Length: 274
Image 1 (cartoon, rainbow, N blue to C red):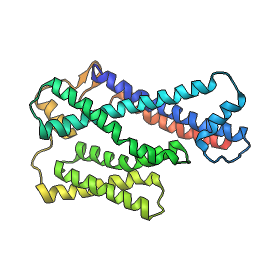
Image 2 (image 1 turned 90 degrees about the vertical axis):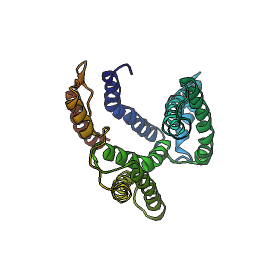
Image 3 (image 1 turned 135 degrees about the vertical axis):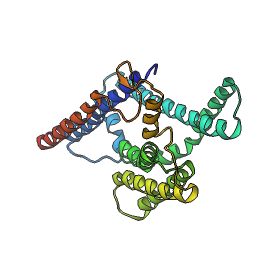
Image 4 (image 1 turned 180 degrees about the vertical axis):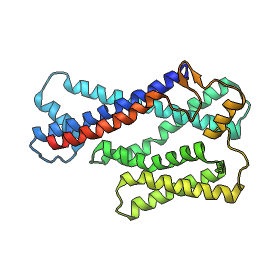
């Protein structure tokens, strides 16, 4: 993005559009359920393919195949970009080659892109035999990581005493706790996010104080640190009408809360209608 405003617009667009995307999935499922009279399929992910083959519209199967490939590529390219960038900047440049040229790091990102592409082949093969809902399977896998990510953001933004070493310990322990809960209990997977976040925050805080002690100053990347920096250096908090300092909320963002309430009301009404 060319500025902070465009970046925020992108996030806001997804905030408002995500509901309609997921609702479309749900609504299609309701329509197919009604069309086939509630019949069960060996693999629910192939229902739309069976429907397309039955109605026999020329070119429909090709359109569906193209749509699946396009959707897959749009997700994979951003994932590979993030993985290769993190691998290069946060590990390769930080710990191995610190003062190379931009061209060198560009080549490194390309190598890491190929590396991660090869790595994901194994889990892709593992889940290729899954017969459950693809959407649910992806959500279950994501629930292992969302809690850790939420804990990282919370500690990075609001904790004064959490350190990098303590956070790494907390993240590792959080993953182990979520794995134990998933394999040894009957707790539903949507709770993994909360469990992972609580475990990460708790262990990271304790580990940081044990390993590095109490910190005298806030991290410059925390919300408190950023607010102090902008105030002490007299920096402008807004750029083209958008806040650039963490801790300040743009007014339009509050519309997401209103939209959330409207969505909940609509779903309750929709449930009664069907």
